Image (tube, rainbow, N blue to C red; front, top):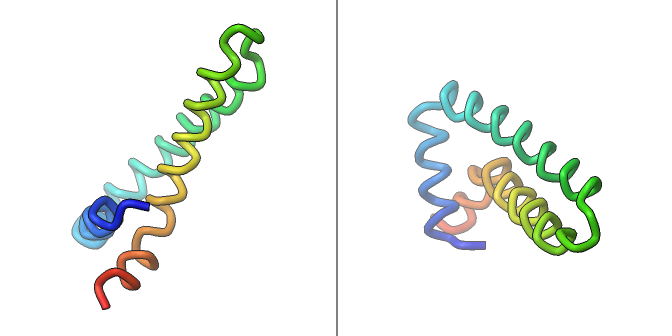
Length: 75
């Protein structure tokens, strides 16, 4: 994953933890919607829906683990 993005996300999480958690909750819900849309997508739109769901999942994982991953990069 992108080290610069991880460090930036960790910085935001440290500076404004409550706001970051609110954002994370909203992004989790958005990610779930993208996954649901992927499941329901007609075959001609499946690859686009799958790509969106995968991207959201990767970004969510980055946000969820940013503090741990930033600690590895900052050493």
